[in-house]
Structure formats: C-alpha cells, structure tokens
Length: 406
Image 1: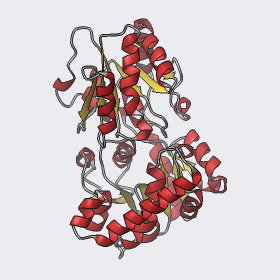
Image 2: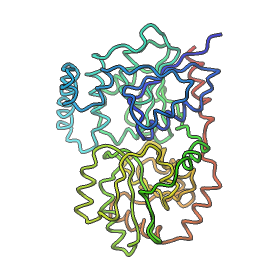
Image 3: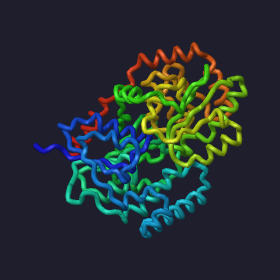
Image 4: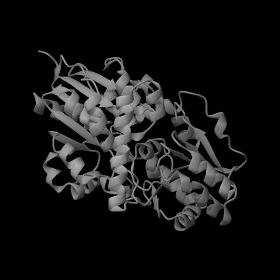
C-alpha cells in the first residue's frame, strides 16, 4: 500500500517560532506512515541542517528565492516582473493603510498583498504529482492554493490575527479556499474567528510540536557561549526572535534603563535575532545602554544562550504561542512575558512564568520587583522543572488530516 504523500511549504528556515515548529513536526512524523516533500523558497537559515534525512527536500526555484530578497537585488538579477509586482503590492497596501488610518504593524497584511501579486508569476511545484495533502506552513498562502495539485489543502496560522493590519476582504477570499486552517492555540483561533467568523468551521488546533529531549540536547551540544559572559554577580536577561515590530525589541533599552534607575545596576540584557536592528541600535545609543543591552545577532544554536541566562524575557506586542518561551521553560528558566493578548494561553502567572504590563514604565517596575525577589524566582524555576512541556502527541492530529484527505 502506498504511503500518503505530503507537501509542506515554508519561506526559509531562519531561527523563529514557526520555523522551529516545522522542524518539530518533521522530527515527530513517522516516516513509515508518510512520505514527505519539503519546499523551502530559499535554502537559508541555521535550521536547514535539522531537516530529518527521511524528508525529500525539493530543489530551490530561483523565482521563489528572490521573493525573499530586497527589491533592488531582484531588479539587478533581471527579474523585472517580480520586482514590479512587489512594488505594485506595496503601493496598493499603503493606499489601503492610508484609507483606514491604520497604526498596526504592516508585516502580515503586506505579505498577503505580495502573495496576490507575485504568486501568479511563480512556477508550479512538482506539477506531475497530486499530493494527498499540501500544507502552507509559513509563506505565501497562494502558493499552495494555486501552484500545487493536492486532494486537500491546508494553511497554518501562527499569530494573533487581530493585531496585524490586513485587508479583510482580500484575506477572506484567500483563507476561504483552504479545506482546513490550523491554529496553534485557543487564543489564536478565537482572535482569528473574531476577524473572520464565517471561517470558524474550517479551524482546527495543532499546537507547536516541540521535543524536550531535543531542546536539552541542543542546549548542551556546544560549549557555553563566550559572548555572553557573566561579570561577577551580574543578572543576565535574554530575548530571542526576529527583529520586528511584533517583538517590541526597540523598547528594551528604555525598559532596562528604568530598571537600572530603580536600583538594579548589575544587569545585562542580550538579544539574539536577525533583521533590521537600526531602531534598536538607535534607542540603545539614545538611552546610553551600550554596556547593558547587547545585540548578539543571529546564532545557529540559541539553546546554550537560553541555558546560560538567568531569566528569559518575551517583551512582545503580540504572539501566537511563543516557541522560545516554551524552550526556556523546558530548560527550567524563569520566564517573563508582557501582557500581550495570548499570553495567558501559555503562562500561568506566578506558576510557570510571570506576566508584566506592556507599557515601558509599568513593565520596568514589575520586572525590577521580580528580578530582585530571588526566592520567588527559585520557586518558579522549581515549578517549571517539575512540568512536562513536551507535546509530540500533537502529531496524531496531523495524521487525522491525512486520513481525511485520502
């Protein structure tokens, strides 16, 4: 009997929650049951080496690769059609934002405009194959809808949809074409349904799959990081994630300055990530926090850094369900997150983490109290170590999707 054949698509495998979650899914699958093709637009990112050998990694396609490049590079390489499509998408999306006087982050809404304009220019993926299941894990949803033949088509959502500025009419026409929409948490489902109530029958929940054994193994697989050395009894904070408005990293210098002003002077906050860090660096200089807020840039293996920190902090404006928060919990670290809308779906305040206000002044006040309460931090760490944060059984829900498609 032939095994069901699955296609998963993703833009790249840089360090990020969705990308780490895909690796967790691939590592949890039983390849005696399924045959898996993986299409990555651009074969870049430190997580590429973690793709299981049983997965058939499809070759790069240049037109897909350039969708992740700066438009100036796309023009220089001669892909004028893709460059013009991306420019047109940006223009139309900005008109939409101006009309709606939007102040929300634009990343996700712009991405769908891009997908609508760029996807028609892209080649089909494995056109000779009809897959049993095709899954857009992360990337342009239109690719799975229009460039793949499959009995069933599925999309994954990883973020709080109510906190991104999207053209709801444009997005509704896209989401409604999928057979199933996978959400990573109850809160993500709830906020998605608030925006698109007619799509609630299509929703199902599969949490981000993460193996505690894998996280602990990677945390001890290299020497402890030399670029995060502790000086004396210094307190080390750490945040990991893409430099984007959602993560709120540009406010870290202001928050830490206020914490120091409250008397916690022996402290340093490290940030691991990638992307445009210009605003963060500007605010570090503006606040004089050069010796206290340290941008480490991209790290192929962030787990030794999480293992070495005292407290993991997620100061986000919004999240779906943070993978790095759970990774820190697996490693027994006290976790502080801001009170973004989905925070309480992941953190039981005072039991397996702390939730603090998002606003800089009140955030700094709450954090300074927690940082100096060593007994409470020790108690929290012990609570976390006694909890199992693994959820590999979520993969059974993925198998259910395959059975439905057959």
